[in-house]
Length: 635
Image (cartoon, rainbow, N blue to C red; front, side, top):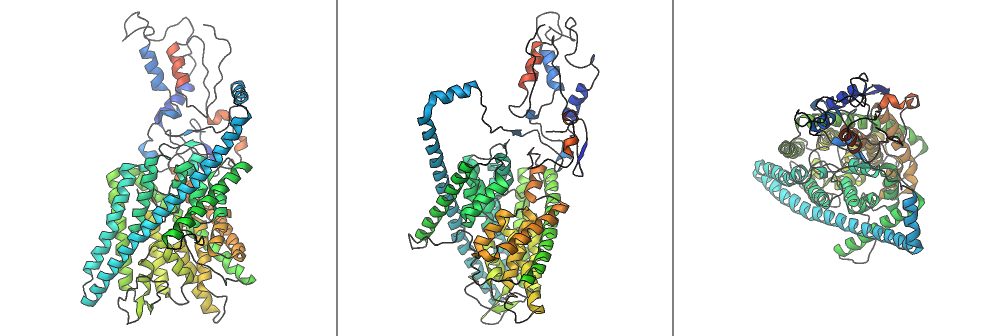
């Protein structure tokens, strides 16, 4: 519900509608009766009433209709917000309309149900299960296509880049690999930015805020079109290939939603966790839920997992071996244990994750507000995306060039070892992080041996990647948020692990990888503010159910601390776009607010011209606003 005429302080926030046409309409409502539209006595004529172009007679009423049109503001007019309203958290856009998913039970509906009979109900229920089956299968196929394409093109990119880097080190000419790295980043990102700026702008970003709004009854234009799916799938492939600080999980969810509003299947194919996908759709997506829907969503998630395993087994040359860990494989923590007193550092890490997440969200909010005001044209979005891609290559190259952190070559974690300024048999530790996709870097931080990365490497990488990830999210490209935040958290979490190893040497429980996992969960929870689904997803990803309690505590603490400063990043972006989404609970003290303080009413007085009556009734949106009409009308 839009606040038009009054300012209401809810949860410390002032809601004020600054749209001029809305205020003009409200002023008209509050005007004296003899000055407001339609309040004249039946015998009096409005100026130029029953005239055409101001002439006498003729029965025309165009001027009066124009007056009504000019002085009336309704939410379906889709007026663009004023320039000063862009990027504001308290702005509600007129371009969106709420839908009503409830069945309208009336005599017509009851008669239709009787004529259809029981056979139709059985067929309809079977068709629903069939649609869910097809949704799971198609979503898994799209996910496999994205992942396999990224894997093949990434191998080509990093192998080619390694070849020229090694030659440049030998010949003492690093200009060629530097500009080659920049070109290999800029090229794919240019394609992704074109898709997200010109072809289908709604495909830009992760897609989770749009899907969340759509599932909560808000009609977001073009959010579930086939054109959006194609732009999203191909665009996120190019974004990951371009080396940006992005992931593919959000676009997976959006892809599943486009296929058949199957948000759970999209998350399931990303992490290969059917139960975690169902919980994600319950916690973050849907506002309508029942037992039959739970079974159907879970069935679709299982079919997505099965299809994914079937395709990957055939792709890896062992068809029928259904034992793959999904598209994002973080490895197994089989021997992961923890002591009871470790809950103290876990709690502190949860606090740190909440603080860093709040800082991340605040910086991204400011960046998004700046973009909405000044980078609001397609060509500007493309230029910004290309610039960020090139700067990512610059930061990565400088970090490898300046930090001489060498370690023994580990062929298990480093597929493309770079020997820059290291002895024979050694590799650059910073290059081991940058010369692979972000999800493989997360796995390296989780499972690489102790002291694989120095304090300086982890600290510099976290600082650089934190701001790069914050800068990247919100570009006009399809991108995800999960992997970049996990990678940031794993970096500073591994720093905590090194500190614990320093304070308690020769202790088996002081494992750097374990604290990297806790830091990753704390950082992700501090940004997106989810608890239940993230606990299950991370717990299933690492394959250790006993670590569920520490993860749950860390995620809850990070959420509580972050909520003290601001909201989750998805909710912030929803508010900034002006979508009138309904929260789970009403703000505090909202029961003390009268309806007349939020939205004024208007009385239709008898004797008004027919065109004005038509304007008032048909300018209203299809959903969300109720009107009381008199039963008897006499002129």
